[in-house]
Image (tube, rainbow, N blue to C red; front, side, top):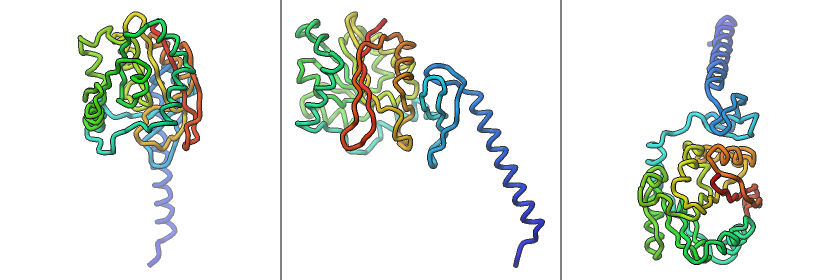
Length: 264
């Protein structure tokens, strides 16, 4: 049994109309949102496989996902994440991490602060600071990750960033807050980085590390930063870009940026 030419014409017409409707809906969606970092409406759609919609900002070059999961959905996702918790490798990797800190002039701050200095590690992925003489407290919504570190004699708690910034005893407590490959997972990085100012002592600083506009198929990354978009985010969040180091990740081949910033 064969279809008539008129049936094929109707099917083609319906497909064309559906395509136009989808394009129109996408255009309306794009026109209704702004860049979460710089506020620009100069956005273009980026299509990567079957990923949800990604947009790139023509002003700051940020690439971001929209719509994004809610805070509740993200909290649930990372609390129930059953992947094997991160354990930093000994030797070469830790030496390189130490080198990254030296390249952003952390040694100078350590000398000024003296022996008594406290750091908050958001994500529980950083053990190098302790070897450099810091008193380190880690937070991570994934209980397995925090329990792993506690079992190794480290200070860590199964707490997400949203809750931690509202703990009164943490206010003005830290001389350093680190987010190493964390900011690209946050729902609202501008607001959340801004909130970190309340945790920093008067002479405190912030360290952020993130991949640069790469691996767009990664389903866990909600934001893909450029150097420009990260600098604008820091400025709008109340920080001044102090120093940075750019490197290519071993075995992956994409650029990573680590930045030290100070409150304005």
